[in-house]
Length: 143
Image (cartoon, rainbow, N blue to C red; front, top):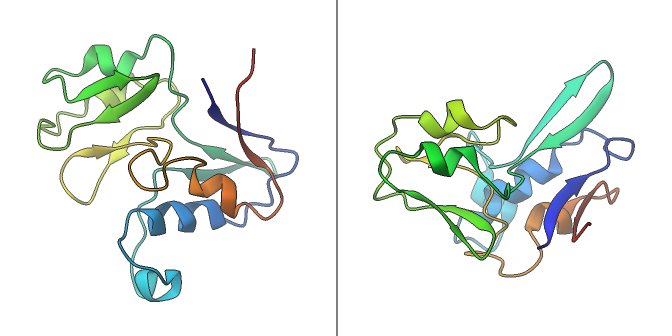
């Protein structure tokens, strides 16, 4: 299965992936208008440590602890992609505590959020990958 991978040697820390991710969640056609004056809440986040920038997003684990810990069954695996049913989520945050990568976070809508590889919005290559100006984020299958 294809997943999002980040080469921290190429990451500029520009945070464009965060903006593209937040924009993908809107139904707008113009990013500047959609995000102007808004506090963005992307499903991918840039972290910086010791001068190295890297993106943190869901790794769609083969044995996801977040899914196992979900008390309502709101988190499921569909074709290798871990998805969230926001209507079933009760915001207990067990999945946030269970994720060893820190890739699940609270959302503005009450439920939790995480990268779902843009399967509901872009349907192909995740927008963070398309928008990365340096090619630091890739969407590929690895052994």
